[in-house]
Image (cartoon, rainbow, N blue to C red; front, side, top):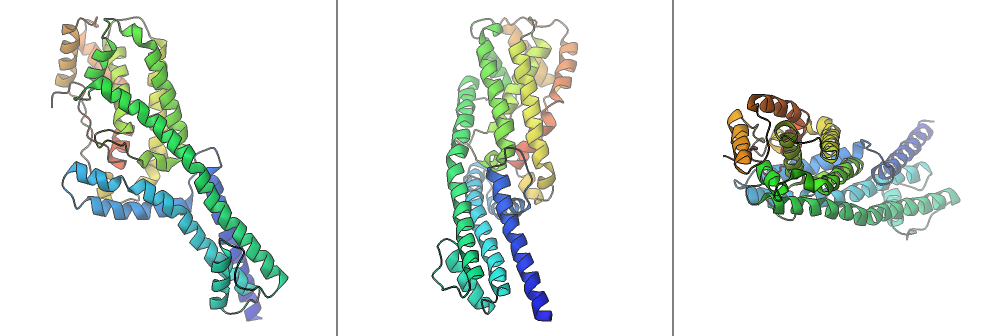
Length: 353
């Protein structure tokens, strides 16, 4: 009687693990919404501990960046390996419950069936059905990852295209002031309406891809000095300065871009917030926080724009207060994501440091 109960429990436990793994794969790569998958969280966080420890051994950002560049690809490759290991253990319990023999015999049958049709002969029809189902699930898991890799890298390429273009427009200082001056190169900020439309679409895609495929957030730019988080901050800073400081007619394209950016950056940050709290402190605070611009930084930007002939609101104090209010809509999320992804340090709006 006890043996029967143990076999029933083993069969139910194995079936539960199989269902859990398959649902994890579906929720990770097929379900088009941001779902928290427990197995994925364990895998990503465990590997993050390792890479954060290795990165903390180095003093320079360039060396830490080189280490962390491997984190997302390694974690992504390890995910199906962990799924397959759990699947192998699950079917070991199922085969043992079906009376296939000892645990060693059941494990050998499970391992041989995982990615093939099995090289160990099954004793009964139920065991044969189980071996075919295990082979099917094993191939399904690998196929899901392989089929979604091109999708992920296409999203990564589109993201980095905008990152590179913004860096070209910002110059070497990579400040919002430089970006704003580039937008004013013709003497009229309204001439770049289509550019704000491009950035709005970029933010919308960031929100969709970086929550449905969260590992994308940790894929680092090809160049160490670039980061999608820093780029998002630059675009939002530029929009905030224009809205608060520049005396011009309302630009609906720019305001929509600013709204889309605030929504995207906050939703991505909220997705990671609970998981990030469980990570080691050094993994979250490896890089210095993005500096909050001071009144001096803001007024330096104000004076620089005035020298360039940009029409500005005459009340500098009122512009400063409005800028600070706009910044509260995204600054906390940007700082959180900057620490989480170990993005390069962003300079204040004035770029004086």
